[in-house]
Length: 510
Image (tube, rainbow, N blue to C red; front, side, top):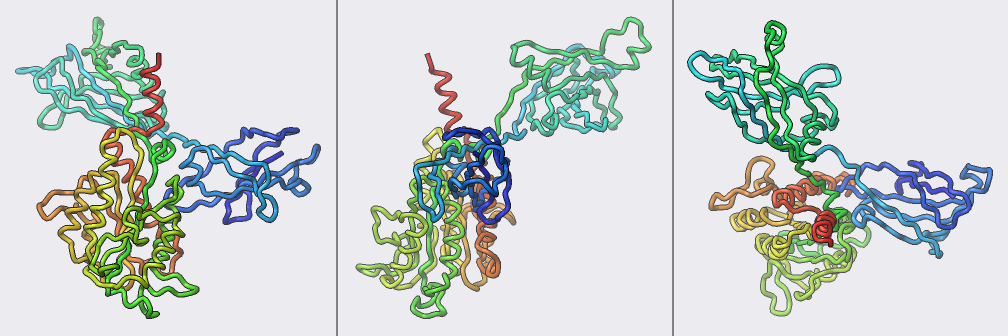
């Protein structure tokens, strides 16, 4: 029995497992390495074949079934179990379970603190002004400066400030890589006096920390060592602490159980044109989806893989709504204010299409109310100590907004919450003024001057992708989301849920 997982969009096989003989419940040891991209729908197809004894080829093998899914579905659930479908897509009694695990990189940081004792005095009228430099020794023998401490003036036993550096920068992820450390006496003319040097490794420093031992190195000046018979050292350097700071990835949070809460807001202002007219941006063509639907499906198709219940709130703004036909900027598209959620992206599409004949397009184009509504839900997540829910608001609009000041205020407030805002400009309007909301060209500020805590807005005009695939639009607007998620949780010091649960059980277990 053998399994192979070709990508759904291609006929070629990526790889295949080993063959397991005479087993109806095989557990394959083969690991498939796949590059993961949140902003793309990565379709996979797993096929299971029964290979008869003495024949390892698939040409004569019996097809047992197949399973199709996306990589997003696998990583969001960590273990995905689905029925194997036979010819004709009929489900049998067999199922397949696929487990995902992220290959960890070297994105962690290490915090280091050093001090020294009895350094050589290089100054005539005062004591030395020492500073420490740490170099990484590269594979080709060259040296790269990793960190230079501040200078401690007039002190032969300095205590330098602690500092943080990534493991990639410190040792290229190689814990045994040599680190060359040099101590200098600072001079204002830039011609610093050499005091001494020593060598170490990250592994040596970390082992001492783990064993609770203080480690120190003799600071050696090679010239003095050669010339002076009784030379011992030019002082000692002490490691005060070496602490690992774990940097969690986007997948750590997603695979730890963090759900993406996807919300849609649709512009129903009169500038879209009468939906009954084929020139309207809201015109429902029997064969061709309009730009609102194209953008909605492109982004929603990706986000839905990260929401377990597949229920998505959908709101409208800028329309006169029944029964009293007063203007609203945050009404439920399904007209159920108590439960604005729709079943799946298709449910959002149907609610949008059904509401068009029942409302009157009006104005103005105000989006601050809908940002505030989603921010209200996201603010409840602020009080938890686990990464449970992150909110993505997709706003689809046909023109420049009329409540820019209120919107800037709402975005600055939302930047403190587990929330991102994606704005897609539909139609051919001039969206130049909308670029101010996207912090790429500078820091967005509220009317009072308060800056955003972090960049949470991505604005894209749909016309830039009119002749591209929907996947290109989704890739553009969602590419920044993983970093936005990590920035929020890391700034708050919030760990992925599964790690928090493990550490809690380890701490409190009898």
